[in-house]
Length: 469
Ligand code: SF4
Image (cartoon, rainbow, N blue to C red; front, side, top):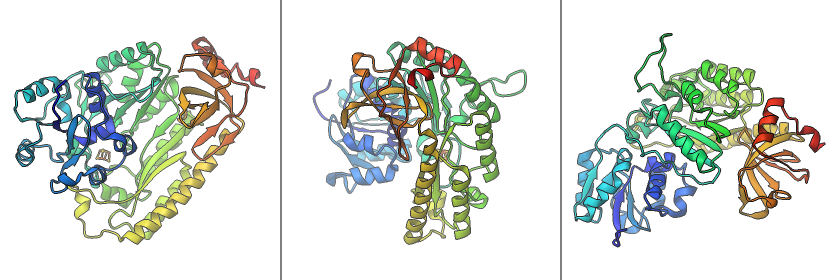
């Protein structure tokens, strides 16, 4: 490990969304928290906002460079990720040793070796992702994230991702499966497959089936990894309504390990706004997707993202978003008022809405979202849920935290759990306390399930129920 402080720039979006970089860095023994608490707390913050907040005073005059602590002296952002600008950045910031894009993560040791010889190094060329880049960060010993596709080929007019993450690059299913087998061997029980636009998985991979469809799709991937022994739950995010197919919904319903939770951003309830956003679907298409999901999986949880006060959004258009939220009844919605991002088309449009309109619309929407979430939560009252325990509640050692298959966070008493050292345990618990986004179990009638019990329960649709009554 080198003793001097290094300068390093990373594609911050990769760090935020995929956590690929830092997982990989950790795997290389280069552990640390380059952004400290800001990193985890601000995982979903916009790149610009995070830069603004983490900008050190000495770096204040250097747009694109954020000062941080730890081994990596500076963690910067190169929004354009082009070689000339990276080189220009090195010239402007002589303390920086290395500027790299996420696609070069698996070469970090080589790049650092060059740095050791005193060179300033730029590694931002486009190139196909090689394996081993993809070790995602694991924040728990039970649940892991596995990146399956990088980049995005969409051109949503508000989004900076395509310009910073580049074109879609899918990993091969064999490599993904291999990684999942390795995780299962380490004791992980739940895998979330990740991609900016995960439904686009495989469209950059070659191969057409005899029926004339692409050989590699998310549906095929789920089928290919479903029987990895030891993995008991599979999730995926983030879905795009444009590519969310009926075949995918049917596979989710048929594949036992795929959990009944779908995060499908709709962004607006108005077709004209969706068109201006270049989202590529209509509100009716979105509706049909949700209807089909609920037909096949009536208890499925649906979460989404929505933006209000997009440039030019009229009051009537905004009201259609409210109507859609009312109609669908989401379990959770991430809401945001439109905020212009540099280098995106909508940022330059003249019909930006004033701040007070943004604030009013967001507040009204949030109130509605909260009410609908409570209504959805009511269905859990008194129900018996299967929970995968992820760890102890940091605020109360007498409680364990876990999630239902529908991704609902739960807190439960440790009563009998302390008798075991195994973390990944399935509990069947009767819900006694329902919050908008949290279920609390106060019963002492905890039933621990081993794998055999779990399989039996899945086969017979809840044989443990009588034990709890
Ligand atoms: Fe951005 Fe649209 Fe791609 Fe999502 S689908 S990452 S919003 S461009």
